[in-house]
Amino acid sequence: MPRFYPILDTALLASRGLEVSIAAKALLGAGVAILQYRHKRAFHQEHFDDLRKLAESCRQTGTLLIVNDRADFAVLLQAGVHLGQTDLPVLAARRVVGPNAVIGYSTHNEKQLRSGDEQPADYLAIGPIFETKSKHKPDPVVGVAELARLRKLTTKPLVAIGGIGLEQAKTVFDAGADSVAVISGVLTPSCSPASLRKRADEWMAATAS
Image (cartoon, rainbow, N blue to C red; front, top):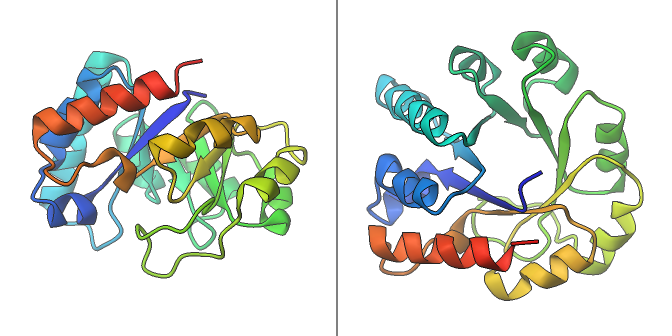
């Protein structure tokens, strides 16, 4: 599992005046190995067009593309899919995307993590590790100590997410996370292509094993 897992959230990018293609170019240029497209509102043709172009860019760089929620789009674009607790069940998604596509599954507590461990997901996400503003109604904070305890309950790759900044990355890895997923943490206040690339480079360096 790549240690740095950036997520392109369309609503957050729009609020910063950034197009998906511009943000993706900066991240792919930094050499990210995995990239998630996250669109929580209704899909329209323009969003699918953005996603299709992103898929092509990821193929050119050998980057694994993960589509949030939408197993159908993942199939069309030969991508992986990330599922939440209220999305299509993992077993059903596996039937849709096939045996080889990557499936990720979000969990927020011990019960959900144990359940996820029994399902045909390739990796599990746990969070929020810290307070986060990337979700309208976030789940209770997990914390680093609980992350370390939960790490022992699964052998699947574990992705930590939620409020993780550059300064917390080492602590999260020390607690047992295999990867750190970042949404707002990869964006700078100015959000220019140059500053985004610089921040991506900093994350790549901070998460290098």
